[in-house]
Image (cartoon, rainbow, N blue to C red; front, side, top):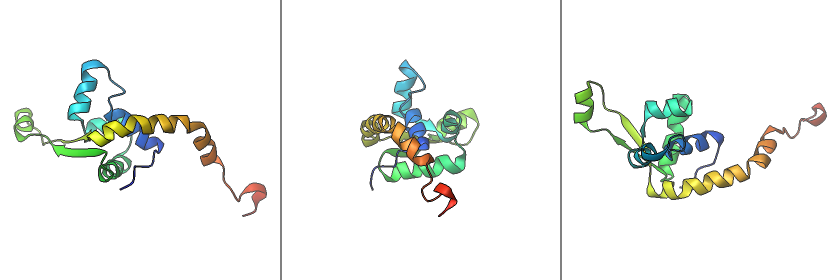
Length: 124
């Protein structure tokens, strides 16, 4: 599958999975272990109906992998298992470049997305 489209939501999720909102040791943990769904939802402030389809598109593109937490961890804490999402090697290599390119093109992309061709003067 082709590389994912760098929408603002995609960029937000990739930044979270790269650990850009944390520092030091925690960033290494995020890169190695990933984030579970609820934690990712809280960090990105994206609703589940936006977040999980986006994660699936990133997974299909080969940028993200998902896995279940070990049973013994969840049982010890008395809760259901968590599903974690982390960047694959391809995603970890590609995401910083894609984010940089999206940032560099941000000014032209944002102005293009706000224009509405065909509506000038009220005519379609």
